[in-house]
Amino acid sequence: MSHQSENGPGKKPPIEIDYEHLDVARIMDEIKARAAAESVRQPPAAGSAPDSARVPDFDLQSGDGQPPVRGRFRRLLLRIMSPLRPAIKLLILPVYDEFQQTVRILHNTNLRLDHLYEVTDRDRHNAVVRLDREREYTKLLHSLSHNLVVELTKLKIENDTLKARLEIMDRDFDFLRKRERALEREVLE
Amino acid sequence: MKLALAVQRYGLEINGGAELHCRWIAEHLTKYAETEVLTTKALDYITWKNYFPQDDEVVNGVRVRRFPVTRPRRPEKFGRLQNQLLDGDHSEADELRWLDEEGPLAPALIDYIREHEAAYDYFIFFSYRYYHSYWGVRAVPQKSLLVPTAERDPVIGLRIFRDLFRRPRALIYNSVEERRMINAVSQNEGVFGDVVGVGTEVPAAPSAEAFRATRGVISPYVIYIGRVDENKGCHKLFEYFIRYKKESPSDLKLVLAGSTVMRIPAHPDILYLGFMREDDKFNALAGAELLVMPSFFESLSMVTLEAWALGKPVLANALCDVLKGQCLRSNGGLFYENYHEFREGLSLLLSSPRLRQALGENGRRYFEDNYRWEVIEKKYLAVFDRLEKEKKKGT
Image (tube, rainbow over all chains, first blue to last red):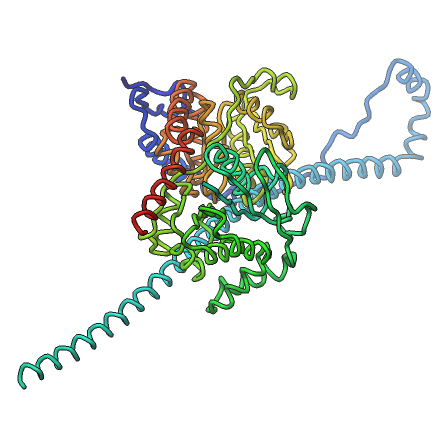
């Protein structure tokens, strides 16, 4: 009887399994096919992310620098002082403007810094993903070279044995040739 | 019949590899023959420093004769020598120097074997790559059986071992893959050999609840049992598991049981529970969804057999031909070569309790048919029987 596995990873179609005649080799063929398809579908290396996004340009002149009015008392105080406002303004206007400008610059600098942090984080993540991938390749290469060493060692051994056999056969052949000649000589005599 | 089993280390302190394999075989063969173990006084496999003070002792009913290691291994020199050997042309003398350096250098053990050849019917040597096996088999070739416990390791290609594999009366392999590899390396098809392996003791009723209660593991988990070591492929397992968890969030945990020689990543879903007692280990295995075996090199994975004995499926590293072969022969587990296959295999197993059960059942049957102690003992006895018949024919 053929059944499907209850649930596969993601939205992929489930692997069909014949529980009556379970065959690991067949299941593995399906798993391998899915894994191969999955690795092909995977997006290219993480470096392709739009990590070169522009830093937004901030207008240093913008911003509503007006401080909020705080409470009734403040309003009342301002009303009382209103006759003196021209004089006060005249006295502190340069400082107030400068102060406002500095606050705006600091605010915009903070925004830039936040953005740069975000970009750096993304870059770092991409670099880690890239590094993981490269590490994986290196490990695969290591495993490959290890297997090659084993296979080469075996081949060398086989080569040695074959050489030895060839030598023995050579010697046998020589011996047989000599024997043939001796026999011929004896027959002729 | 009197048997001597020779191995590089022996004792209750050693709970894995060829040493444990040898201990279990020795303990089981005592039922059929007078069995002794010939070994060194070493405990540490890196330096082989003498550790056991007694020359003679009884361990679990088996007499153990210990011989001193005359020179501990110098790991740096050994490493250099091995690299030279594997990197370029060398002579047989270089290989023998490497063998001496690898150790455990216990000439008294070889002298004892040579002097007491007549006292024993057979000598069974465990682990082909050590001093005791090479010189021991040469000392008593007509009475020797070799249990190579060989992995796919480049040193197997050394010339001295080609000769070694052709010398003994019989070879007892752990798997068909091991046999195939040794045959290919040494063309020793002429020497009688059989695939036997080793059995394992499984408790009658392991309790997953006991494990969950004592260790506080509530979530479903997959388990790795063994030394947490890069050589065992654990770094890959961590990498794959963390990536899997990132891509498929769930409350699945990875439980690790065994001593560690590497840094374990600090991840909330990786639970390292340290070295476990045998009953704890089986309780943990009983509660697991499956056993994961990331090792690249195995001669025979005992823990895989234990998982199958409990009816648990296995997810194994396909780059280890022995594990892959066992999964295919038993129909008891899936395997992976890379992350994508790991993810697909694990997802499939976790999503289908029925598949887990079916694979586990197949694994259990495979274990019952091939690795129950009665089966292993019978195979050993059949080898002795055959050798005895040959001996009689010869005389």
